[in-house]
Image (cartoon, rainbow, N blue to C red):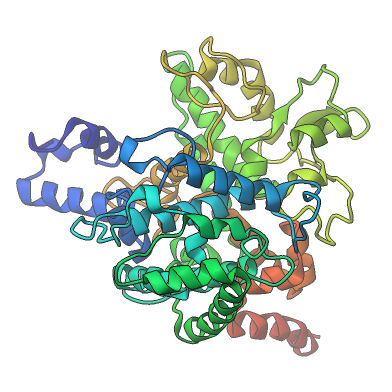
Amino acid sequence: MPASIPRAETRRLAWHLPDDFRSRDLDQQAEILQWVRSHILAGGTAYRRYHAEVSRHRFGLRFDGNGPAWLQAQPGLREEMAALIRFKSATLTDLGFERSGVWGEATAAQRGEHLALMMGALAAPPDSEVKGLGVPVEHLTLGLLVFPAVWDWYVQWRERRRGFYTGWEAEMLLLAAAFTKERTGWLRQNPQLADRLVPIPGVVSEVEAQAAQFDWSAACEIAHRHGLARTREIQRVARVHRDPFEPILPILEAGSPVGEYRKIAEEVISRMPDERHYPRAAAETVRAFLMIRLGLHLGVRQKNLRQLVVCARDGAPRTERELEALKRGELRWSVRDAGWEVFIPCAAFKNANSAYFSRRPYRLVLPDLGGLYERIERYLARDRAALLAGAADPGTFFVKTAKTTTRDAAFTQSGFYEAWRLIIQRYGIYNPWTGRGAVAGLMSHGPHSVRDVLATHVLKQTGSYEQASYAIQDTPATVAAHYGRFLPQDKAALAAKVLNEVWAA
């Protein structure tokens, strides 16, 4: 390995290099390193490269007290954000307020993050890498969202960074329209926000700030109409930047997408280290196998898989009410069915109010196929404890590899995503230099891609968006809009299969 490569990168590269790497000439070594960096470590897609580049320069404000001081939201803005989240996510609204729609936990976190990015862009210095607007942090307030010029600056700033508009900007403008809507808009019902408004040179004049303070309702109505009009304009020219199908295209193009993805689990097991000599590495391998297998069998979102708690085979399963309070599912042994079942209350799902659930829980008995039960029981008996290494047990089925500094062995959202990507990098992507890896042309991706695989597989087999929606606990319309890759040739092949039976007879 060249001495110029940092030690941290050396560890990441070493896994993907052929055994005879050191004996190859320097040109071939450079070629191998370049291939591994571009096809495995970097992520492959244009969006991934763009995201990696912009992520180097943090600018989103923090509302949790963590991070550097210059990224901390001021107390006034923190109070406003807390009031907004409470208004949109509380079970009951405060007296005198009206709202349309309720945010779940995941939606509230996502919307909060999006607004934090917007506020951070407004505050970032114009001469920095971010090229923000330079608004002093003490002047930031959610009341600024009432000005069309602020929204225009922000969406155009995003367009300059990315090179084109996407549906993300349209979504944010719809949020602006919702916030300023008559009767139910949060901004509309909080005229006291006008008291904190100050002019922003080149964007909000003193006259405009005073006009908003004088007639808040009129300012909100202008913002509402502007948000809807701008949304239509951006939707007309918006382009797709992140194609969710691109990283897994070789899987989706296969005749059996699930069968193709299953090869990754088989590759994991084929490269299992000797538990006697490498107990922790063996435990990580079993965990990787189970992550892939449970992902393929359940088709749930990352959160539901990551937060799945476990009950020992001889233990007492939690009641539905207990799991509802936790908003988590449970893996437990079903005496009635003599098998491992996953039970998840509908309240734990992002789309809990979907017609798919009809307010009833999700329950699936896992099949005892491909060594699944054997490895579940081995994982619970030995491997999970090896991963915890004495750390406090979070109760979840999947746990991190605990270190001496580990405070919580439960996976975070980003931690689980990175663990999945690591599995794909090590076992999923075919590496021509080592001959290892299950699928040629595959790229790094996270657990959410499994939902695309399942929906597309069912579509190819049945042609039914209804049945595809059953595989991922959603609606046919959602599958058609976001998950299933069902091309004309797939439809033609399915019809031909039926028609060709006439000729075969």
